[in-house]
Image 1 (cartoon, rainbow, N blue to C red):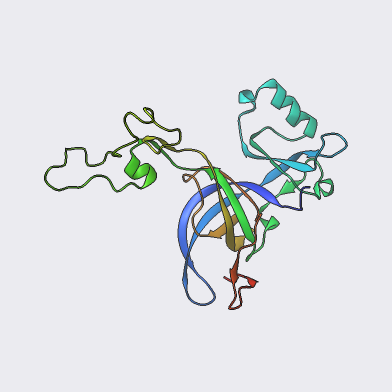
Image 2: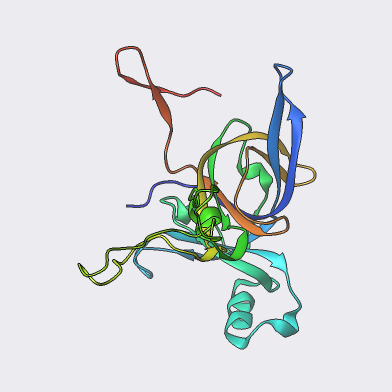
Length: 228
């Protein structure tokens, strides 16, 4: 059962730092959120679930294939570059063609940010998994950044699946949970999110309502809401 959620597509502009009301320096990531447009509203009767589909980004109409061009034409909106669905129980309150802007969120709200992490290409075990590498003293072969042993010899005479090795690192869908919205600039459509978010500058991200509410344990072990 989907719960009520809000979400918007945006572009990661980069990181900066701002002062808060306590005169403390806060690192924030600036996201150019929207404007997005609703292109489809999914209902349980027709689609089997509640969701709202939103579109973001400009694109040359000549670069849109015919199925997508027909989809945008049916919604009565110009073609957009990115599409995303937000599962929410109040999808029926949205209308096709409705515009969604940074006003969707407010300062202090907790959000999850979804993006494609930075790609590092083919990386070794020290960079990819944090291995310490081999020793640097006398008697060690010149392979200091190698993983070392990856398994036994005669038994079991193979390498087990899942052994951490060198390989492709990064460039995968990544979600950072429960980040705090520091402030909103409605006029410029900016959302300032405390901390770092996935992806390169200029990458597309999804900002949605936090799926989890983090907390801390009190003196007697009870879960209390986290502040700040």
